[in-house]
Each structure stands twice: as C-alpha cells, then as structure tokens.
Length: 148
Image (cartoon, rainbow, N blue to C red; front, side):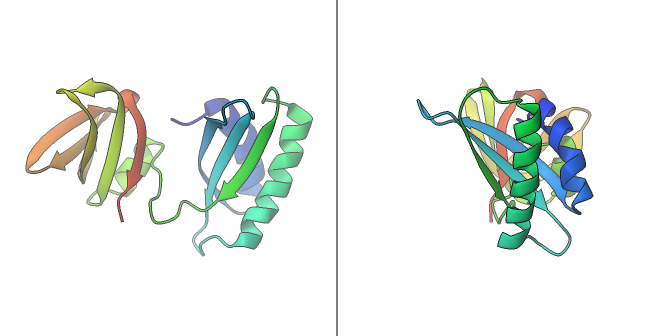
C-alpha cells in the first residue's frame, strides 16, 4: 500500500505546490531498478504541466535525501478514472462506487473482490459482491481502485 517514509518526505513539497498527494507506489522493474509512481490531484484536475512541475520538485527532494537505493524512474500522474485507493479516507470518500480490491492473503477462499463499496467500519472496508457483503480488513488490502 502507501509508502509512509516517502509520503512523509514528499507530501510537504507537493502540498506547497498546491496539490494533494493521493499516493505513492514503488514497483520493481526487474533488474532495471525501481519505478516510483506518484499520484497527485487538485480540485481543478491535473495537466501535463502540473505533473512536470511536481516531478521537477520531487526529483530535487529525492536527489538531496536519497531515500531510494540504486536506479529509479520517477513517474508523476493524475489518479485517472481507475483511481487507486490508498487510505481509509479514500475508501470513505468513494462509498457507493464500484471498486476492485486485491488482498495480500485470501479471505473466504478468494483474493479478488469486485463490487460496490458500502462503507468503512472500524478498520474494515465493507464491499457488496453479487449481493453478498464482505468485511475486508484494511491491513490485508494489497491494491484497490475505482472501476469506471
């Protein structure tokens, strides 16, 4: 899920530029280092110019602080139509939307759930799939996104 260390490092810079840090994904590129994907948003939406501005500033912060060992590729983008959900607040904000959730470990014999996001209750994300309600522990969610 969310890379807390990088979020704490980069959030002040991104917020100072007038954007919301939606989330960060650190993905292995096999033997070619790491892909660092940063999702940003704003009430007016995100343009290519916004991504370039954030990328330039974030690259400077990463160069000075060196939180990533070895080679990395930086990618800054909007959340898009298949908006990833990183926090419980994101799940609360998108209650009523169709979502796809992938768990780290199976629950009730399955890891993938596609259905309507009902609510967040305590630390569980409640989703209805084909008329059945599932309480999915937030800490077991590997990936989640809106289904357009």
